[in-house]
Image 1 (cartoon, rainbow, N blue to C red):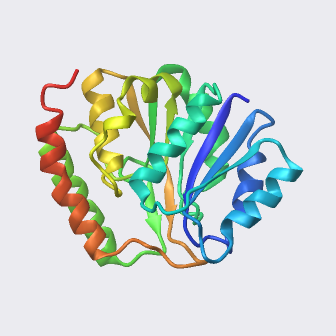
Image 2 (image 1 turned 135 degrees about the horizontal axis):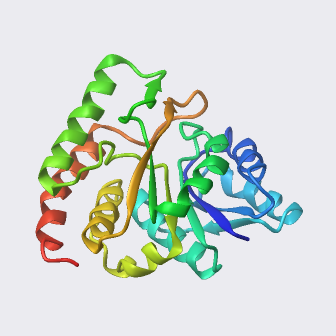
Length: 236
């Protein structure tokens, strides 16, 4: 296997089987690990059954632990241990279209970390209201200014890493337990001098299931940014 998609899930039974199928369709050398927080709707059972039919499908079921940040860390560590060259981070709700993956992998020849970006030319969003889009742009501006990042979409969760990037950052000592893990790892990779580029995507709001993201989680994530800046100000 050359690449593995890492997909954190919680109550995504309406999406997960089709998502896995579309990820696997991106190439015979593409697999997936679903990191599920013991979803009450049985998401993990669907993945478990799928894994019996295709060895490229892996399930990491977490019991007693919950959260986007810690799920991402465990998923990254699991994927890296499989020895794949590329690790793809994406959401389970089809806001990140699997059809982008095959073209993104071709872009990895001249970068170490690729960001699927809504904010560069050719990128954008559909299915979201103007207020939500404004909030996303405002959050990105705040994060970029606080952390000194040149990347336009610092909140994108659709990314491809060369394995060496995740091996170079200290995944065992991250301070984020929620969505701010996206900014923490991006900031660390930037400070390490890895080659990072943005490629346009069209982000599509979910049509099946309910998001666990809310204003409280968003506020907590933004409050983490100064802590991240302070912790890694001398990181290299």
